Every structure is written in structure tokens, then in C-alpha cells.
Length: 270
Image (tube, rainbow, N blue to C red; front, side, top):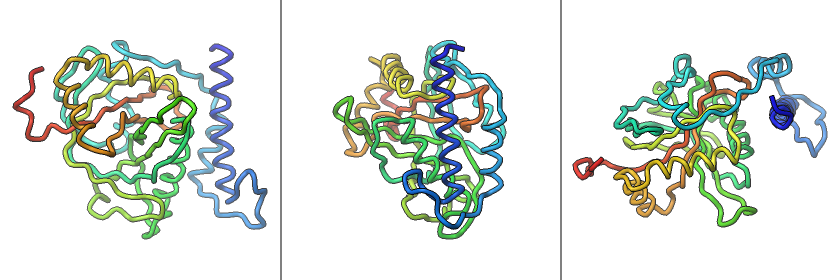
């Protein structure tokens, strides 16, 4: 492992530990400890103990043709949205996802996708642990996705919407919660590129550019562009992450580009 990889991963671990600790103490780093402590869930305690004791090694990202068509191992353990594979390219897939429901954060302004994902995930984690209007606990699912609305410059904050896939059992009536809203997707086409390791801001930009390059000149690229032009709120791309932060092996991430083909399938010339 290179020193810079060790340092980056250690900072990631430390940052997550601090978030969980301050959440457990019901306080903020800049405000100091409060006089009373909020209940600390056994699940959060297990996260802390896992992070403190785990001696696993950092997994370098894998990209492109060497990392393609992999079924995320996580989806063998927890529920994931279902889809049909429409086409498998050299280093991408076209999928058609069935109707899905996602619980989503309000837009998060940040210069870092990684930081915005962490902020949104903590909100969504509280939601599935019962911090909702029904005080209902909800099963964990995968992936957690982050819709990216890029800024106009490298030092300007972009907008991110982080979402949790709602299990089928809860989709008819997902519990509402302050600061979150439900997104109901109709059947949706998605261009997908997979990559491994822990997500970084530079990796995501590279993978999104590579996906656009792979699709260039295809009917899929035209459909994506048409969908973006047809909506004032269409994201540039979406990042899907299937693993928890303390899983080191078999990490699977994806860049998604969503588009609408309903009613236009007959026009495809692949």
C-alpha cells in the first residue's frame, strides 16, 4: 500500500468514527458536549467497534474492462432494485430498472461528492433506524445513490441529492420524515459503468467521463442528451455505492446516466 493511500484511508476512517461518536453524544464538534447523552443504538456501537478493530487492507480501485458485469455481492445479502439487462457493451451496460421508490435528501451543497454522500447517508441512516414520522425501522438496502448536479467552476459548490432505495414492503407507503422526500421512478433506462475500491472525487469524474466516451455516437448517448434537455432538473450523472464504509473487499460502485426510452424503443439503432 502506498503511503498516500494509507493516509487517505485512515482519514476516511477517522472522519466516519467522529461522525458516529458525535451522533452518539447528540452534539456537534464545534459546540462541545451537551449535558445529556442520546441513546446509542447497538448498530452504531457495532459500527464503531468494527472500525476500531478491523485491520483489513485498502483495496485499490479497479476500472474498465477488468471490472465489468459484476453482480454486487451485497445484493445477495440485502434487497436491491431489480432490472433487465438491455445491452452489454465492452465496458458498460444498459439496464432497464423497474418502477422504484427512493427516499431522498434535500439538495446538499458541497464541493466534494464524498463529503456530500457522507452527510446524506447519516440522514438516511437515522431515517431507517426509526427517525421518521412512524418511528418505524426499515431494512437496509443497496445501493445508496448520489445524483450529481455539477457547479459552473472547480471551486464552486455542486448540488447533490443522496437517496436510499426503499424496500418493496415499504414502497406503497414509505414513512415521511423531515428533510427527506420520496422519489417515485417510473421504469427507467440507465447506462452503467462499474468500478471498485473506495469512491474518491477524482475517480468519479474520471469514470463519468469514461462512460460518456464509451457511449459516444450511440443511440444511448442521443437518448441521454434528449432526456437532459427535456428536464430542468436532470442530473448530469449518478453515483451508486453498494458497500458499507467498513467493508474493504469486493467493493462495487457504479456511475449511472439515466434516460427515458418509454415509447421510443422502436427507434433504437444499436
